[in-house]
Image 1 (cartoon, rainbow, N blue to C red):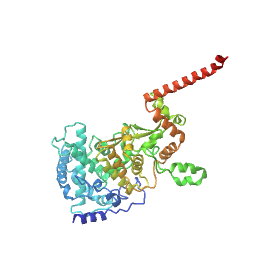
Image 2 (tube, rainbow, N blue to C red; image 1 turned 60 degrees about the vertical axis):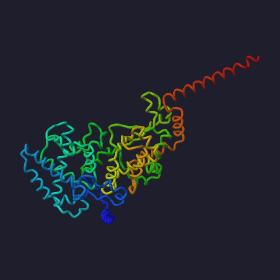
Image 3 (cartoon, helix red, strand yellow; image 1 turned 45 degrees about the horizontal axis):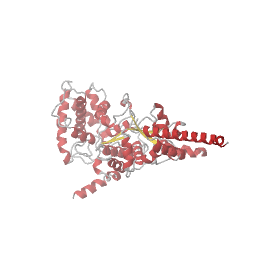
Image 4 (cartoon, helix red, strand yellow; image 1 turned 120 degrees about the vertical axis):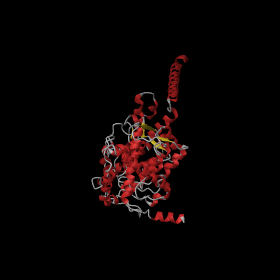
Length: 469
């Protein structure tokens, strides 16, 4: 019986990916932004798209295993109402409910598919919106060490494991409320600190982008649709660092065929092979996750063997992949899968996350590849072994379809480097004789002894005729 229910659930997960590109300047409900996960992705790992503790919005509402947290939502609603008493806004929730009723049609249109609901749609959105607001405020106050409105017996904030699991559930694609609905509630109350709801959301989900620029203004992000979209936008750097090129324009001139071939590369070698060719991996701070760059100097890059010298200028002799740190724990796979599913449905022409995962998948094929990136701190994980990291990465791209990549330039440069015989020779020389400072110094000593021996041999040969006469 359970099997038939599962089959029936899977049959409702076939989605029609919209062909029209989303325009952020349009009305929030001009196209759906909250989707059922495509069946092809859902069947790969169902648990990654299913809430464990709490349902948000109508798509998972009413599930029996989530009922305990449903009861807790009512307690959070009462706590939120108590916040309004000092502000003399006791009737604000009733006003907010009236706004939701007036915009019910617009909110419904944000969902690609709605199930049959036993409760009022407005009541579901109202309760979940208030719960999220109260949860975010409690976490913010706890981070600021503010004692006001904090209950030391709070069921969520005092239990880190539970708090992390709920944070994971709030990032699921099917477990979303439109962002503008939450922003309206926040504006009605006029909380002074923080002054913007995005700041509150960023504080709550801060774990997922801790390496961004310290002075970066997240309020300048494009229109955010929901929490899944917030994380995606926070990972994408500026267009000048990451962009798609129009390959059709390159076909107009035969002189650009070489350039087109250079940019249309769709794969790269593994991290171990690139490292054998003299490519170094370097962790960088204060960059967004997707901002991966390949840096090499036009002249110095041909002398890779000197990159190990203990001088600041030695970095100019390196061919470096600058890699923002990727944190991997038991929630990372879930979040990445939901970001991928969201892009497959909503951003088919701008699959930045899909391209990133595909790039990392190309770099990591075996345990040795993962071990190299972990050693360079490009990947920091809490899993049992480096092999588990490789297995996780290699499973993310199953049934993911993309027809372009934003890393075309990076891939072309890496392939050009890898296919250079001279740079391969320099890479081998560096790996064998210039791996570290001690081996480098012994190599120089050996070269000096060899030159000195040749010089002495030349002196002996030069003086030999004089001795004979």
